[in-house]
Structures are given as structure tokens and as C-alpha cells.
Length: 143
Image 1 (cartoon, helix red, strand yellow):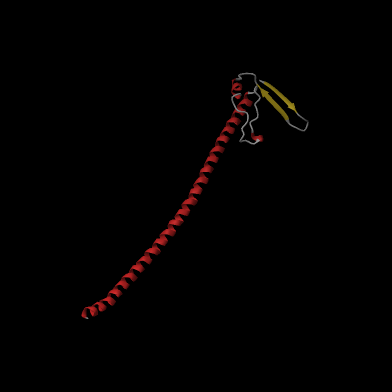
Image 2: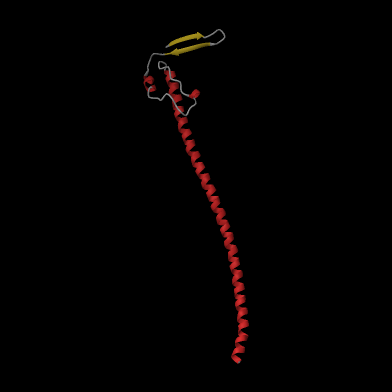
């Protein structure tokens, strides 16, 4: 393990860098990881690792994994929001249908009552006509 300590300026604290030249098996995998994620702001993009540092490669892998998860979650949220918009549109349509059904039920009840009234008036008129015609028939029969 190689360690280096530097002070960038007198008013800044020391920066310590440590790295090892052993086991670089993680380095090969870094090439397989995409370097940019279009869904992430520039400041949140994973920084390319220092391939000679295992810790840097590990941090890059973890950051890239989180970026992929973020991408997946963002797309799931978009799909759920689309579904929500569709359900809200269906709800509005269902409410319109329910209002139309209520209006038609009210109109049906009004027309049913009007029909009963008209049937009653018709029956009364028919009876009245029958009463008026009956004495005329008896007069005609007697003549």
C-alpha cells in the first residue's frame, strides 16, 4: 500500500491518498459500466474511478448501481403517474355517466307519474263519455 499526504495550501487541511497495486480484478468490471446516466443532473453523474484504487472502483460501482436504480424508479414513477392520469380520466367519465343515469332516472320517475295522471284522466273521460252516451242511446232506442 502506498500512502501520500499533501497540504494543498497553508490554510487547507492535509489530503491523504492511499492506494494499492494489488488485486485489480475490480478494474476490469468498470469498463462494463456506462459512464453517463441521462436522467441524472450533471453534478450527480458518477465520476470515473481511479482504476488503480480498488476503493475508487467500488465507489464508482456503487454510485453507478444507485444511478441505475434511480433511473428504474424514475421510470416506474412515470408509469404510475400515467396510470393515475388514466384512472382520473376514467373517474371523470364515470362521474359524467353517473350524473346522466341520475338525470334519466329522475326523468323516468317524472314521466311515469305523468303517465299515471294521464291514464287516470283518460279513464275518467272514458267513464264520463260512457255516462253521457248512455242516456242518448236510451232516447234513440225509445224513439
